[in-house]
Length: 301
Ligand SMILES: Nc1nc2c(c(=O)[nH]1)N[C@H]1C(S)=C(S)[C@@H](COP(=O)(O)O)O[C@H]1N2
Ligand SMILES: [Mo]
Image (cartoon, rainbow, N blue to C red; front, side, top):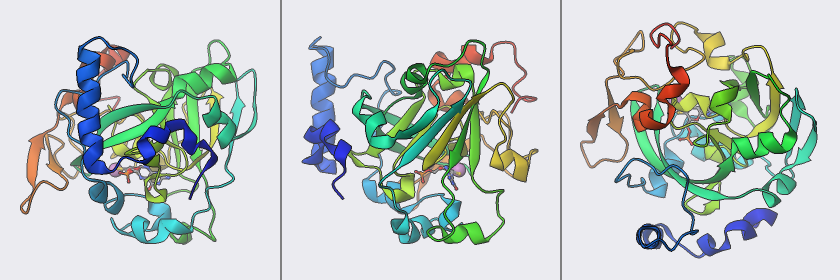
């Protein structure tokens, strides 16, 4: 359980979920007083985001390599060996290589980001991630000028991932971002949540989080990051390009062919649940709308 990089956020280790909330409130207060550098993300989450309990976050998952049921990942993902972990960084970078995750993390600035995760299936929950900006890693790798896209790949180990037996998706799970999306300060690679190591079902030991896009863009258990000029292959667009586009920005005005995206079910909201109105770019329009200025978002969905 104890991983080398745990020392990176040791003050979180002793903090349970209840205490965590009050600590967060304290930090918010400190920031308000101008006390500076404690954990302040460059972009604050939308006002009033209360994280879901860790039980919701770790027992209601999509991780098809471990099965398509919402509780399959919690049951099966424990089998994934996450140490040691190597990430290949290749393509149009100055320093391609096979990097040990512990080295990546030892040089990373781990921050806390509380983001709403909005699944394309029209449900959402709020997750307090720990991670670092994808931009900081790409900058270290030295993205070559003019490079247009970043492609990502999940590990594929049939002996540990029972879902790989079924051709639900074209494995390995693959995703991609345009370079400006990848470099955006809201885009992170998560290494933990609630100040603990990332649970396997949430994509340990390294997963992408792009909060203004549907959850499936947040590829889990990443083993390869490739900088390239072609729009990356993405497993979901390959499975059904009409339902899942390359951009997949959260947009209440562009419905999924089989259901509305105007509202979302809030996971864990009491006995009968509740719904909320889905926000443009999942509430991050002020930060990211400019990336898509002039684009027809119904066409580039
Ligand atoms: N490799 C891989 N990554 C994946 C998925 C998956 O099935 N396999 N599911 C995606 C979907 S549909 C969602 S909504 C989020 C869910 O993340 P969570 O389980 O941490 O909430 O992970 C995304 N990343
Ligand atoms: Mo999803």
